Amino acid sequence: MSEDKKPKIDLKARLGKKTVSAPATGPGGSIPPPAGIPKPVGVGIPAPPFQSQTASQRPAAPMIDASNPYGAMEPAAAPVAAPAAIRIEMSDDVMRAQKGRGTKVMVLAAFTALIGIGVGFALGGISERNKGTDAAMEGAKELTKSVEAANTKISELADLLKSAREKLGKAQFPDDEVTKLGALNIPFHGSDLSGKGIGRFKSEVVTMLIEFASSAAEAQDNKEQLQRVLSGTKKGVQEFLESQTKPTVRWSVIVSPTPVGPLAAMQPIPAPFPLGDGQAKTWPESFDLPQQGGKKVTVKRYTKGDAASEDPMYIPVDPSSQGSVCPSDVLVKLRGRLSDLEETLRGNQTPGEEKDGLLMQGQNLVKKLKQIGASPT
Image 1: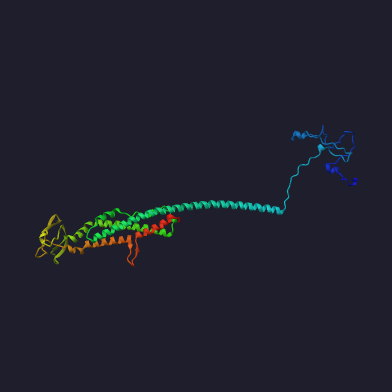
Image 2 (image 1 turned 45 degrees about the horizontal axis):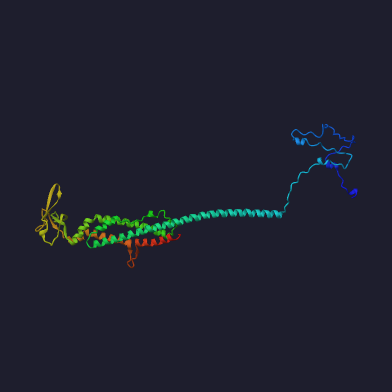
């Protein structure tokens, strides 16, 4: 290679400072410092007070032979280049691809998280629904038992009412039936629907339950009222019924004179007596009325003459005519109320007047409840 092709070395640019052209003072001579800068003492530049000892013990600046334009610094004094930072340049396509992959990862992570949350909620919802379904099935089973028990009592009550009605028709007072009526109750109330999960039942079943509970409560009230009426009218009804087979004189008429003419007044006989065979010899000749104003009044039986005398006299009333008075009305009403309540319980199967009774409602309700108790609602 020729000398012209060799690269020229600019020592000034390389060293970053001007060199002072001065003749060497001799071998081992040094370049005098610039003006105004004190000559360093010893070898090298003293270290600043804050510099570490290692830096202060570095060798002195290298000596350069100014007469040798191709001279160089000693290898140990050559500046060491700091390691260059590695920078990776990526194209826009690569960056977009990387960004796209990052977005997909984020979307996938978010979607996975949402799925996890959704599954959590779904599992929680399914768990709650399962609990509700189980509670409804158990509630249906319990209600089935309650309605069946109520149906049993409803049937017993209907039989009692029928027996009482038939006895009254035979001129017998239903003593046994009245006693049993007081102890027989329909064991179903609106409170039995609480805590049975009926909110998960079909609306048809809920309506049937409410109607059954309401009808059962109404029938229970009617039964209690009827039982009180039978107990309260027992004496009068028994007397009337006995008079149908054993006529007994219980009432009399007392005729008294008044300014407008004779006037009859009904008077119960203190000691009723049998009518007998119609022979007056068996009738009492007189009886005493309750004292009035501290004076006892004796009433004689009328036999002949003027019935409207100054002294009061009684005339026996035929027991057979007693049926047109209050006792018969009471009996008719009692039989009517017994029949009405029995129809409420059993229903009416008369063609053209068909009507389901409480017992049929309960039986239909049991079928619905058993279906719910056997399978999820």
